Image 1 (cartoon, chains in turn green, purple):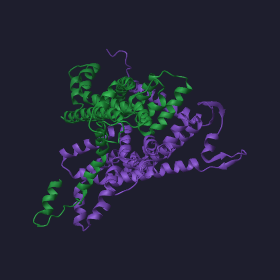
Image 2: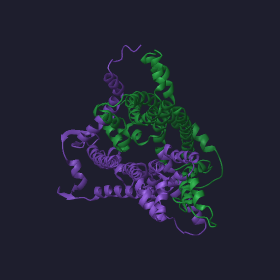
Image 3: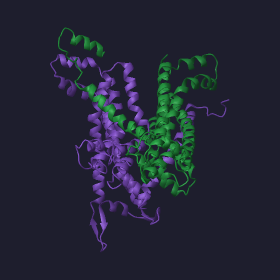
Image 4: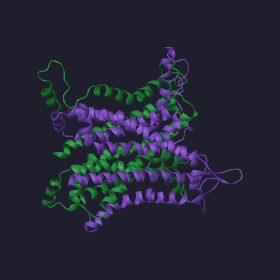
Length: 281
Length: 300
């Protein structure tokens, strides 16, 4: 549409006239915007190759801080904790979100639908610090102190809406005619679900699981408050490193975690774009 | 195969929703209620609470005891709360001014390019907030990326002392939540009918009027949603005030964390959380009301 407007308004004039709705400087503004958005990431990665002990004093190129980070036992332990928490939280939250989304997207209109939707998206609306405090108080009130299990339960809770959203979006974009056809061809309700609905829904489920995984891997404040001494995850460990003093080792660890997240989100992007095109046809 | 499933549609429905209700109900809703109860109890000096009812936590927001045990007004906490609102408001405004033109620019692009821009905006959002805020220490800090070249060129003679200021916190907050402003605005701009802009222009609206009287009113829902999505997490922010404010410039979020980590005054921390939660609930109610009013107007 914008191309049409460009043709209609700038035709026949020697001086370049901006078409209606276009404004000067928007492009430059956008470039500045993206520099602002990516500068910290570039700086972070750049300084991770600093050979000096002090982050901000450039002492030549080197990868020794990566080697040091990989050999650090505490970091290894934190990475394992993070992976365990994220994997378990992803499995549970995706399963819970999937059946919840099936009911809310396919169950028609029923009493309590709005309330149910509100409840599932509740963890998105409550500020993280409030969730953290509430869960901390809850575990202490019931006297439950199972280390990593506490952290996992908290993570399952706040990952549910993130897994839920792509699954519900996929379900709402899905054509029900294939399921009806299966029913017409004498497939039982279960068979229809197992062999038609689930395969069609799979890209949504995968996308939801990826988001849940990234969100769990990146969570800091809730884990910091809920987790005890033995349940340090990678972001919590990074925080303690920052408090102790800035070395390029922090940058090295951060860079690895950063590219890990970017890889998953990129995969999510590819999956969800593919699912958009297959859901329509 | 499905013999164990309930027969009725309603039964299946609630069976499907039961796990969500169970997990979020038990581990989020119930904890928030307990938090409310805790805010009305007395603190235990070693953390936790004593089962004695008290409104001391809420009194502490406004008053303190002086040496002779008299209640005197103490503006300390009110100042922190006020600063939290101020900084959150500033960051939201910066996000809006910075983000709106970008959302608009993306809408003008052909569709294939638009998706790529959106991808570029979402990437930082999905990466770790702690890491992104830490990067700002290297940029703003003493001898950091901004200062070093300026010092070397002789433009400045001493450190600019950008870290540990309200400005540093505001930049950190703006940076943290900028994508949350751009995405909803873009979503509402995407639905904009560009023929309306041409109609306005044909009816002698100036460029500025096309923007202020056509585009902005039509994407108001997106702007409001974006502002809320930025303002709410800013208000409860912990990482930016902690890392960029050096823990001395407190905001509500860091004050809450402090009550549990160091001060060991759980009821006060719970009371502060309740305050934060109420502010969020009030904003969401206003938002829902304005959305409903708009829907009614469009329906009429």
